[in-house]
Length: 419
Image (cartoon, rainbow, N blue to C red; front, side, top):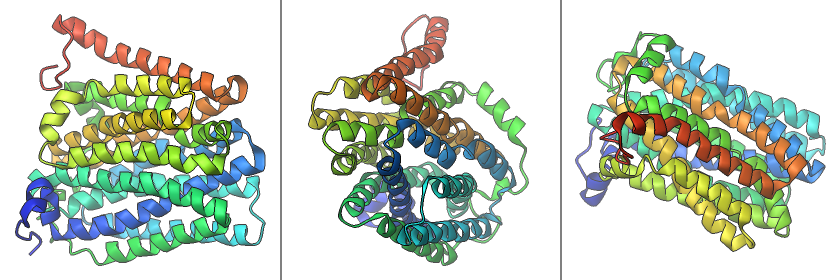
């Protein structure tokens, strides 16, 4: 049986944990997401140590995230409940090979900027394939369709535990040892994920909540659905704006931390503050309070992101910046994960794969452009002016999305159930 009895408070607050396969998946995800952050932040710290160039940091992060724009939606179209595990395992094997290559090159002092760029591009391609594969696999592991939203939110919690701990681990390893250890630990976490995915007790084909997506419609139908849906038509572009203007922390933080006294010393703390805010948002969204939280907070979060960017830009001390990073992390995750959870729960099963691909293209696909933008601005204007500009652009973008709807309603509506 795939569904275990509810276990006290955990079953009440986190109902997706009553699904046996979901628990196994989340264990592997918890370990591997930490490893992914360790690898990516180690790459960023190494590039900063080699070049001290925000523009080059932005370019490397563009390579890490850019392929998602093309790869993720195409992968989403081809993923089904019956091939999600096989696809995920294949992609994880390639990711493991890339991590081992990074570790080997770092250990032999042969990892220069050119090699980093090539391996970052390969990691970006794998990430574009892996993101929709993991999400379809998670959906395929859930028997009860009512638990899809909670399972996605729990996955967000796990991701943000990694976002909080992974950068801190990477910064500590980089400062105390060298880049080799970060890459090696990242590779070891991928092995754990491979073992967990291979041993997941998936329900028979046709019984999971994702089974209806076996041969669903294409991306055009997903776009049509988003345009017709009153919530998706607002928050799909909002997620793209959040990714574009607030998703460039990996480019911004090393330069900002350097101004506060050292990239390796403060980067972990700043990343950790943002990650802790994201974790708090993820926990809130993963509980039974998610519907109420979404309806009351979802519309205000893009404005919080804008305020936090401006607040970090004016922060005189790293502790003040950490408080703003907490707020940014909370609002950033609430925007992205809240919409993703609600979208997957409301959407028809046959559209789930294409919608995951479209969401990945809009949100994750906006990240590389954000990294390039932040890197170029920081190189020319400095990191603080860049943060102020990004905050202003985020506020202007949010106004462009929501003000026309408010005008049509003839009121400023902050409840997403009534907008």
